[in-house]
Length: 478
Image (spheres, rainbow, N blue to C red):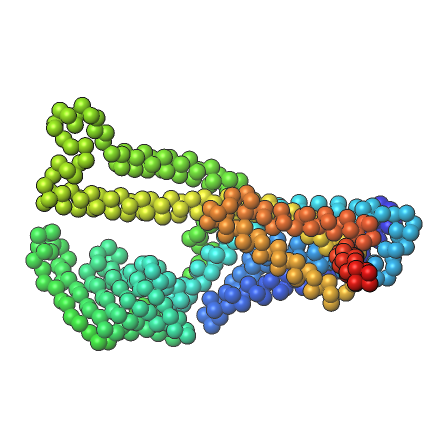
């Protein structure tokens, strides 16, 4: 390796390592802050907390790497240009393309590293972190209760409510509780308009204070037939306030490595994502095709030939064959049938869109991983010429430019993902949208920097204006 190549790599790697560690720390703190309420004040062991931080670190590495490359490339080339080292290199006959050749090779290596990381380590970290968050919720069951679904994690109870609100999110709306005897029989049902969760730290009980509700309980014998159960008495009462104490002492001893979620799209490798897309697509197409045939068969109007009409002495205008009362009946039946068919079509539309959204989410994630692997190269081709053009090193201006560019990249990437999931654009375009938009910008900047030109040639805009006003003044003098 030539001395110049070693010097270029050293000039890049020094700021790269520093910026990578700083950006990684910032991303870890951001992710930790979002999950802080799930681990704070629960008495969770430090070992589990450090394990959780380790998973978060592995998850943010693929995002921190392109940002560090963008910032360090601006800083490295900006410092060389600011110190006139770039000018000396160009004066010796070495072009910018030859100058950045070792850095391009390094970008290929980092892109390969990011690809392998996204394919193997990122899914594992996503799998472990999400399940660890779920398991840590069990340490304080009140926080584990989810609105809109039956919560069965607490042994002996199935709890559902419409909404969780309040400053501490401990207030419930429209509560429904099934108390399950021996985890088999629902013989006690409690409903309430409002509820409050009380769970003191260190207490073995989770307390639910219910307001304005009803209590229903069947009084059953241990061994009874179906007919006997129908005749058994039951208690039913209205209450203004009712307290339910649930023993949660056994729940606190959770297994941090227990796996409940395994098929989230971020938890799958590229091969698994491709397998899910290939497995879900044919059944979806068969579902749509069968539904379309069924709708066509149901909605197709019977054909009345002229011979049939003449044979039965029917009027070709169908309603004219009935009297007033029967016309009303026919029209009402037609209206009901039409409304029923419209409801079926709307339900089919919602179901088909939901199924398509699931397929698109896996497909978009697949292409997004590939695009994110190449983000190292794309952002380098933006950062390196920018550094050569602005001729400014350090953390000041390069940091601002890098943040703005990455925010644009992240925004376009997120927009493409959402549009693809909603079936507005193809999942392939959605996954690659940020690359498609920013790669031409990188090639444009590289060309401008190679030709020693600024980002914009302001004369291109000013010359037509100057010529326009010059012609006007000449006409006035005449």
